[in-house]
Image (cartoon, rainbow, N blue to C red; front, side):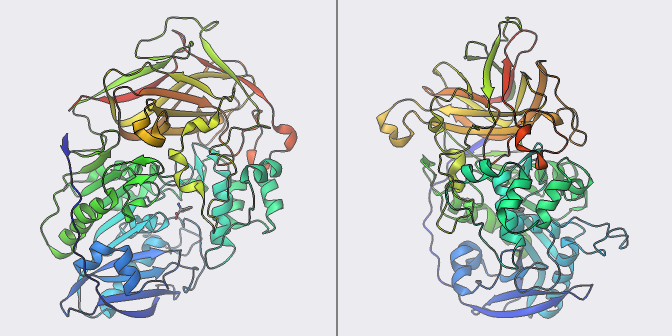
Length: 605
Ligand code: PG9
């Protein structure tokens, strides 16, 4: 492990003017896609192309927005190409949410006529090579979120001119861990809002929830109730949720990981520790790419960011201050050199494999792989029945050694402070910072179980994947389990708003019916301890001296996640109001059923 302190470096950027052209680029099936092309006016040298494909519109791209949004790359000298994907904004054809990858060797194998985002990227690049004057024959593809998904797609069976890609917060598997579900729990408010945003118009739209989304969704019930209330009819993505609540073929063919053996292009994955949408994607893609990374050309950068926040200066997120402009550092010191190296043969790109911003100590760390193995030891942190956390295995028996609470779907735990606005409200939204919101807002709810460590007399640093291994029972026949690992700051006025704060470091939900199989859900036997083991994902965080570690477990997280009726029903998307039942939950901390969190504890350095 190598720690680096990187100071803020003064930027000497000048404004660069671009010539702007538009084109309708023909795809192999005759559909034409709309693109904006921008070339610096101050040079006639052959330049590489930096391409972004997007469902969010490209009309806004001009000299001003390129200089503002891609400051370092604009300095570097690239031809920028921004393209509307099929069915969005100025492009022809039909939009398909998270369009599956087809079998490129058998064009008849799919109902999508052999067309997908990989072929559209391929055809676009082929056209650009022939039609954009003075290009140097190399293309880089980048994008955040949906455009991040489109960036990795450009690397699958890539056009040979594609020489580097940077998928940033790409959604990768919408059912397992990104936008629409996490471990089978449906992201109700997000799935509802996002489908309206993309499927009610060719251009972005806002959902019409006014007031508190908590009330809106509680009143609507399950997805079938949401749809009735929406007034939009059944949008294609909502139909997908209704027909495919489990991880069946529909979601499996939309998942990107299985196609990544076909990526041989140098790849820079980028992700944020507090990404409210696609935290999982970049780490999952990196893990799928690494095994066949023969030339050491797969890289990952993980920083203290929410969704896409590295595109801005980013010294802080919510009340958490990182002490440096981490977004500027990433773009100037990693992203721009990455593209300059692979597209222009310039020096200066020295990332070995992983750059991670370690929170708590607030410093960039460099590792040979993610998660790093060297200097990291796995330790089990036990959830004891007396509410404490310890590294010693409990000795009690099941009859006495448990923590209990009642989970009532009629009064679900809010995932953030109410009132909760629509996800993408035109007037702004707490959505972007909810993951760093002080968990003290939950007050003294008796449906959130809490375990706390003693005050740390030395720092505990966790670097790598954190796993929850719960032994729990429910009086119902289905249940959700939410686990949050929290850094409790000391009461200290010099910390300002962080004095006494409870900052979530990792968190995740697991829908109990999927404990044996994501494809074939099963009821949970009532009142019987069962094991629920699931990843809380990666972190690189130091719990500092005088802080405490806290773990919280609860069974609702609303309305980001739909409520589990807590009685097994075949399809929660269409559950009736009478299906939702209160349940008594036990989390065991006994010798036989020792609930614990598996922590990758790093040696001090
Ligand atoms: N995270 C967004 C997304 C939602 C749903 C599907 C795909 C992507 C986005 O910001 O693009």
